[in-house]
Image (tube, rainbow, N blue to C red; front, top):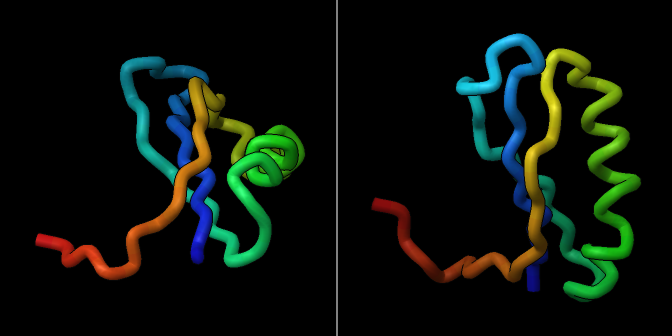
Length: 68
């Protein structure tokens, strides 16, 4: 089952400009996702210096859900 690290990132210079981002993994557990989240988010933040991370969570991805 896929696990997703979902987070909100906002622009450093325009805090009202935010977007939702996702990092997916098919390995591990929710606890593993949470334990590894800070390292994953630090790597993302290093590649996207103009953004800052506001919040994050881990959850299972429902692969059977249809997008509308």
